[in-house]
Image (cartoon, rainbow, N blue to C red; front, side, top):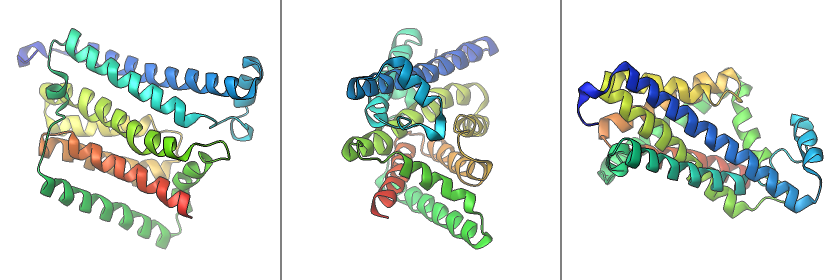
Length: 248
């Protein structure tokens, strides 16, 4: 599939379908593994657990076992992406996803800009009295309860899930769109889709934090021609958020 002529609109549609399928596979696996974890730990019936989870904010099981479910779902979904690239696209997965070594100097420069940007956004929002951005911290707090395995939570939310998200958005989806329409379109498209699938957050977080963050991650992926820096930046963001939550 290295021949650009093969990247017809038909192939793009097939690729998007595969992307959606993988994301649906991830969400389904996460839900099933979390349900099985709660069922095993509580000995309650599946029907009772589902009824409780349906209460949303009033559910006592809403985030129980999410760290275990996220690790398992992320690993299986990453394997699925590698299988698709190897056996359907007939390409080397690491090369296709642009997972390769890059300059440490560049990584530190982008990381510095990234962290400075996040701090600046938080400071400006605080000065403007935009309290809605605190929802991100509130979400991190909700993941922590007496049954939470902190080490596994850090591995799941701070490392593995960001890796999966970067691989599927700025690896799997980005590469195909870039080959067809170029880096600018790939950055715009993946950034908006990334924000849309995080619609559980309020509009302020989506527009002020997630969308600019996604643009920057996409730019980093395009400019360095490597997914590695974007993975490091995303993992750093999630890990710092969890660390701050645990400390304060």
